[in-house]
Amino acid sequence: MSANTQGIIRNGELENGLELIKQPLSSYADVYDRIFRAVPVIDEKGDFVRIGGGFGSEVNVGDFLRAPGGKYNEIDVSYTAVTGWRLNDVGLASKVDKRQLRVQGGGSSRRLNLQQDSLNLMIQELAIARSFIGLSMLVGGTITNNAAMTATRFDDDATDIQAVVSAQVSAFEDQEGISPNKGAIRIDVARALSKHAKLVENWSRTQRSMGRIVSVRNKAGLEAFVADLFGLDECVVVNARYNTANAGQTAAQGLMWADSMVLYYDQAVLSPRTPNAALVRYQGTEDGATATGGRFMNGEVMEWEDRYNIYNSVSYDEQYSVPRVGLARLLTDCVA
View 1 (tube, helix red, strand yellow):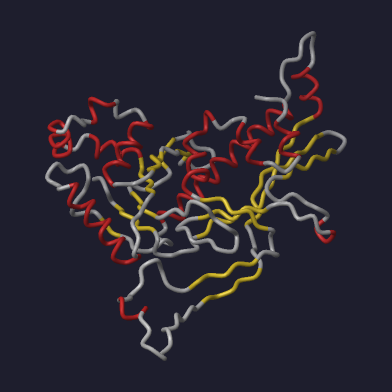
View 2 (cartoon, one colour; view 1 turned 120 degrees about the vertical axis):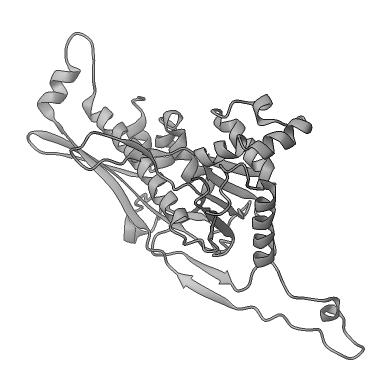
């Protein structure tokens, strides 16, 4: 691990600290980097306006025409104003025995830096925790418009996948007046789609067989395949795993997410005052006001010690949110 991790995070840049270890944690980085749009806010101080209505409108050409001497029709805009955020305070701490620190790092050549290693481990644990929190929100149904797929599972060769996909996209468009442009899907569901007999047959005749392009073990290939199938700009294949065993039991790795897929609309550019995407991640940022002492809230390392131990803690302020409920559609029970 890089020896610069502690210095970087001390400067309030948790994301940069994660960059140092992101490669082996790409499955977890995908969740908060690619699915949830980041919006910087000052905890307990920001505000935003939520405009009523969706992208679709019930209009006809007559609404825009004005008779001589008449007046134009008026649009009634409803909104709610919210002042201040209460972001979640997330963090982890470690304790290193000073004697062990000397023993493990001593000798003719420097061997281990237990304090640095414990800090790196905390960052990894936080990355996994962020993934778990974000995926729990998606599967928890807070995005609404859930659709169970129990009768038309993607691993059933009798299922007309293209018809199912078209129906879900059409339902999204009818409800929201806009097409989904992003998607997230668990890796085994994506693999089931790539091996579906009807899709393989269809693409074998159009020279687009998944087998000719890439192995189903290739995550990037699966993402391109599913995005093309659903007509999306991007699809995140979720392969995040965690230890499902209780404390003291033998570790057992399991997929975090249920066998689900979500279609959603992601706004290309977000402003803190207009969060119009389906999924965002409000992240605490620096407040230079005297009241908070300029505390960095998007990543802070604390260090203290007593006679025998050195302590470190890492914390950040963050809140996953669904600012535009309805701009996402969750499909559950996608495989048997």
